[in-house]
Length: 260
Length: 260
DNA sequence: CGGAACCTTGAGAGTAATCAACCCCCGTGG
DNA sequence: CCACGGGGGTTGATTACTCTCAAGGTTCCG
Image (cartoon, rainbow over all chains, first blue to last red; front, top):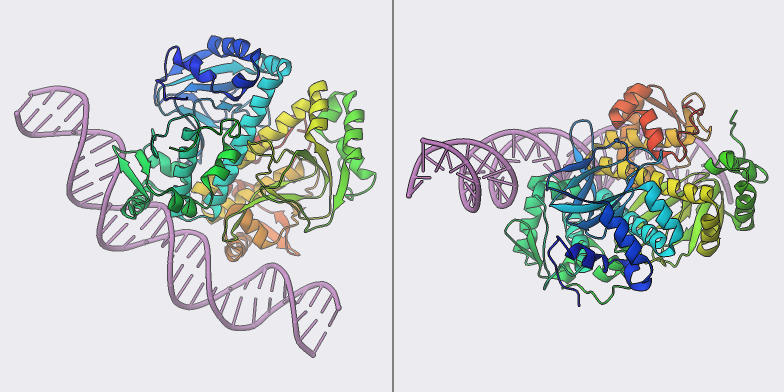
């Protein structure tokens, strides 16, 4: 049974067992674990790990905590492109193979393995499992971006907000972080707005409206409880189960983990 | 010298020479060409190659023509997530490794090599170059999605439109399809709108406004000429050169191909 | 000569941004 | 203990942008 574990110390390694690879190929995790452990670093909430356009020749593996990936316009307007949760893998380099197309920031205290491409590629070539893991992470990332882009372009504030909550709920549920529909988001309304393309003021209005309708409840600034999943998914325009298969790496194999 | 060639027959193979891999590793292209040729198929404009959620275990390599990748909300609202141009490579499967997260449509007559994953993976494992090509295509795709998402969420209609024209110009220029700032887009205003999250009516207004300001000129429904690249890139919020490096696979190696 | 599909332009409606005020919570320092 | 200040969150009023609806206009084709 998966249980929520604190995000530090020995537990990071236990979390690795949750990664897709670990269950299938007992030969790899040891080496993979070693690689992650030897490149592991911790960052405090608010730290900027990488600026847009900075050189980046590494793969980021999140062991604990949340990272945000964002881009900014000259006038300071910011768009959060994705959140990286524990178990997330990202190669932030753009087509030139050198510079990062994204700014990477820690939203909470995070532990991240920053693995140089050469090292990662070596292991990836040797191990089918690691290679698959990378491919699957990229596919999930792409699917998330597509779903979000659809709603950014065509959805109302309500649709975008509902989708964001649903997506984060589904992703958190996959690692046992949702209890009875309740989960914690380490986000300000401003950041949620940067994620779904709304002003913080309008995020607030939209969340309040959904609360009043009894679809969700919030406590303590961003402890969210989904009260009416059916209504939420109708507004978001997608079934939670469909979404999980699409955007959660190893969503199929981890099917025993359901939404709380 | 790159010249625009008709998109059929022997020319498809010539175009392969433009692919990143072909210049660097003389050993691969032959085998790679064979793989593409043996899986090559043609589709008429308007054909739907793949529906959202349909099973997909193949990699799509565009040899000629344009593909659109889109997603739809239940109410029929559609978002075009990306365009695939000649030389484009895409694995449309989502995190479950089985179903496509995108609908794939032909915007023009296209020739596409649809290569089963098993075949592709085989060659990809053997050849570093093919593997790199895949990685780079994925990185470019991701970078494009991120740039566009930034403007979808935070940009005005003018910013989004200018960016779309700039992006497409930069990508077309990379394969010699821009002459003196002029290029052809096989798109209706409706489709351009689906791409940048605007109604077709507002696309029209925005294009007209930019024409009146002397930034662009249009003929024949979507033959676009960029008259004032400086103004366009200021509105779009990015330098063409920066953008090229970020979103065009092998943008660095192909640096001799400049914007017209 | 229609008719269809698309572009263009105007008018009105609706949604979200911005500006501004107030609240609450919490940590600091007197 | 309390005054103070800062950072968010909440709410109202106003503004601005984009959508929708509607009416031509153009081009192409049967």
